[in-house]
Amino acid sequence: EAGVAQSPRYKIIEKRQSVAFWCNPISGHATLYWYQQILGQGPKLLIQFQNNGVVDDSQLPKDRFSAERLKGVDSTLKIQPAKLEDSAVYLCASSLSGVGQYFGPGTRLTVT
Amino acid sequence: AQTVTQSQPEMSVQEAETVTLSCTYDTSESDYYLFWYKQPPSRQMILVIRQEAYKQQNATENRFSVNFQKAAKSFSLKISDSQLGDAAMYFCAYMSGGSNYKLTFGKGTLLTVNP
Image 1 (cartoon, chains in turn red, brown):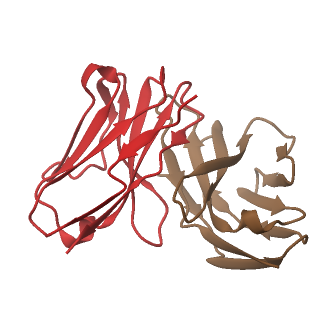
Image 2: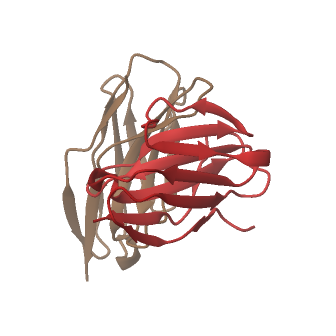
């Protein structure tokens, strides 16, 4: 069974530029999560989807971050415009039952 | 809001020895789950072990076991017969038993295994 796929693995951009990350969850997993992990900290949930609907986006900075999950499968997380403090690893996870979450390898974003 | 505290930023252990990582949490809920995740330098977060709050018996997975003290809100991870491959960042995480399945993570403990 293929795991959660994410791309790109690394991205370097200048502040005020835009960037997008892609996630493909495990086949059949209805729930998809995006986490932000700043260096030296644990992951923080940004947004949670159930199929293509948003369950929780309370910690998503909506003035610059957006996410979508068209057709309830793949998801894209976008930052526009990026700030220095957005430098982090962005993790995608998916789950079938909710309790067990499977994580992807993450995308390391550096904003200069 | 729930909080998870890992008071040991770094720990080290000799290969084949036993090490215990600490975690405390704060919640007013009675139904919840607790997890330990391992994150190697490759960044892939891997589930190590899971505990349901309603279960009194401590979870075990091969060399990994937990000491779950519900009244004290403590959830420590014991790694027996430590191996070089156990070296990683370990995160304790809390999940409410409600329907949103949101994980709240601690700041992590970096475990070094010395040969």
